[in-house]
Image (cartoon, rainbow, N blue to C red; front, side):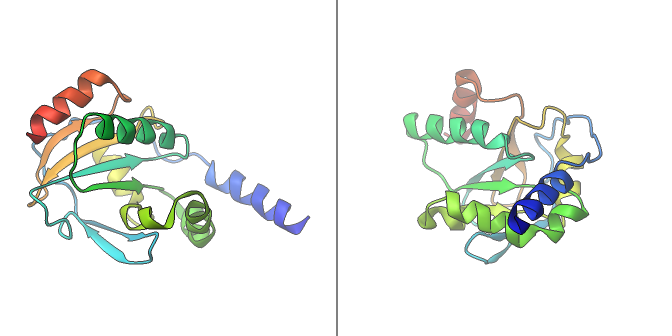
Length: 173
């Protein structure tokens, strides 16, 4: 009973409105310096901790973003694209920060342990990321390809499409 009440309160708090920011075109810009914690509990500073020539970041603003992220991950695999790829559940607001351990624990239960290092939750900088990319159509993931200096080489935020995947592939090659 108490667990159910706590879960209901968490859902209400986590579904509270956040600020709306218009979608932005950020290709060519520098990705902002942010930090988060992987599901392995390692603190990661983005983009400076990404050392590869190119790194793909899949940003989700809502739990429903996972569907779009999964389509991107399947598409990348089917297209034979292999590069460091990170999922960034990016959650703005005070309430999610208060429940971050509960949220991360729930994610750990649904994600195989060997993938935990590639999932980095962003709480403190969540609002900054949403403002940078825009958060209209929050179910769509934000697909961001950065170089080793953090410069954005490719950005897409309209939901998975084969055409967008092919354009990303061309930019990677």
